Length: 123
Picture 1 (cartoon, rainbow, N blue to C red):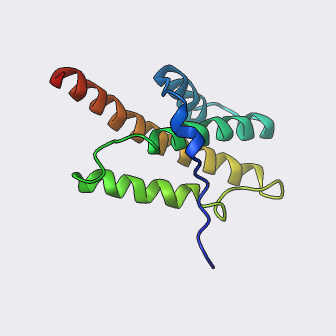
Picture 2 (picture 1 turned 120 degrees about the vertical axis):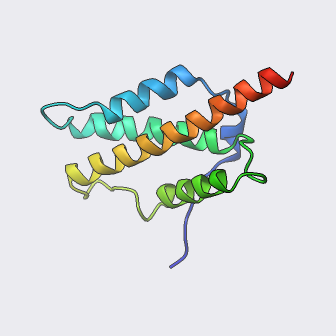
């Protein structure tokens, strides 16, 4: 079975808006007394996948940093289309996937912030 990765060259055209990333991550990782409705889970997941794709299109030091390489491997694994929930997936399965993408997106955003700070300090 081949791995299908959902990446697009279009994502590189859009700037990273960290406030939007943070908002989507906060929605995904918020702890509540009840699980969000499925439409909220699906919409949040779509937003997170878009943010994750955009972050993965950035130069985050992949060539120099083994930790960043590991992060990218995890990103490709999570974005594998065969792992994504479908309409037939349970609400809990979709919720767990949303949280997994949220946690990973947060890690990528942290690396992106660090790279931006380093660029600002260097330039």
